[in-house]
Length: 220
Ligand SMILES: Nc1nc2c(ncn2[C@@H]2O[C@H](COP(=O)(O)OP(=O)(O)OP(=O)(O)O)[C@@H](O)[C@H]2O)c(=O)[nH]1
Ligand SMILES: [Mg+2]
Image (cartoon, rainbow, N blue to C red; front, side, top):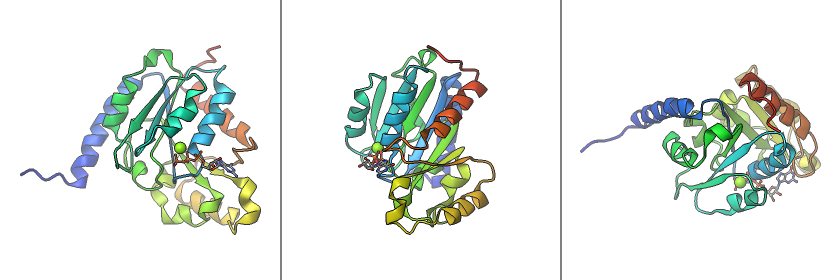
């Protein structure tokens, strides 16, 4: 009987992630990670609204069971694939490669992946993306970066969302940012109220910068 240890599984995943990097080529691939309900799909909706006439976008929606998030993205007429993990708490490089094969990547500037809602496991699985985006909503508590450090240490950018709800929480913004900085010296940290479209521009500019770094120029 062959027993797979976590190390083997992660190694296999890393090998596939390297293959994905070749497959993704010149497409900017962003992996959005955060707890259930932190606002990942809402961020996607607002991002698509803002950038759909600027870049050719595609979406992979990761969810445990439903197609609800893909249905929400459906109204934007952007190529979207829903992946159901059937209980799995994260996307893997393998499943991402299968989902991405639905697209003609040479026609896509930015592929946005919404990972399964989970602050822990998705950070362990490299999908071959250019960048992980950590989303933390203020209702989750300012202690979460310190308690769940991997995602925040690996993220290329950290978004602190639902700032409209700050008056109703005891979230200490300075403390959260200090902990994030302790884990990650470089990632920009942006505060935003995605629902009411406040503070989105810095995130959109960051995405534009990432495109520029990959020599993706405005398509339209
Ligand atoms: N007040 C407030 N509510 C928000 C904000 N962003 C998202 N929401 C709400 O938070 C809830 C969850 O948002 P989603 O975008 O579905 O969260 P998600 O991270 O995609 O959730 P899962 O895919 O289930 O992990 C919804 O009711 C959103 O309307 C925000 O900036 N402020
Ligand atoms: Mg979602």
